Length: 319
Image (cartoon, rainbow, N blue to C red; front, side, top):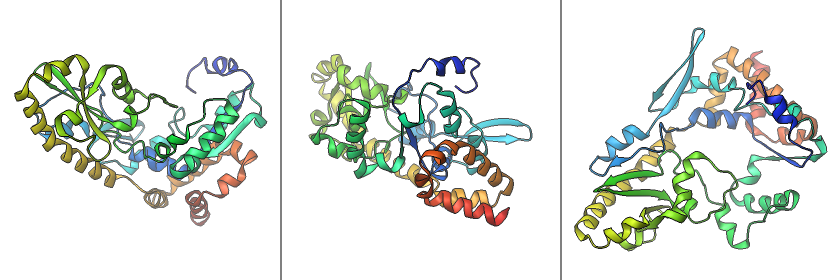
């Protein structure tokens, strides 16, 4: 968006209003950017006859963005790479841009901006934070019965779910029931389309096939409602689908854990920057520019960031 020649006109159209600035330790941000597990497509359809290994060969993709001399190149890999951090630092429109965005929002006053740290919307603190924000921004507050949902790790199956299978003109969907149990989305992303469609178009057949509500408390099996009536009359097809999924779903859970173990930690990021002095100093300049606005209104948040403070100390040592 910042590279769009009409951006200033767009931001000028945003009227005076209350605004939320969600911030995070930049070392944690870089950790997530470098560990991100993307997917080539969310419209892929897999034949039910394929082995789990064949399916995960297609699903598991990390994008290795890196500079080759003067040129930016990318390729799919099976593991995340730390060298992509150089690209992420310069991915201006998507990463470290808070101060520039603040300057662009010319109709919004500093006193109308509420800054909160990412830690306040994660885990046990999320429910109370959303109640506070509901009052500040006049949106419906979550119900007391929703409290448990806000403590759930929403992205647990990101990159591996949803999965769509095809078998005998029937489409079978493996979905994460966290996204299927509530139609209210505070933030909508493209990969949630199948989950959102589950409300109107799909029938949850997990109980029908397996006499249980879900697998691993999250994974459910769905088909289109029109196909459910057909499937109920076809015992042989039911058994074939059941047999395949009973083998596939445990393998999917295993793959999720494999991908989780590949993720970098904040310590990995710090060690990488420490061993690449020029990149480390570049990161320092990028972070300082990014955080100028936050430093002027909520320096206490910046001071609370453990890994960023370690990063600043490291920069002092190597400069």
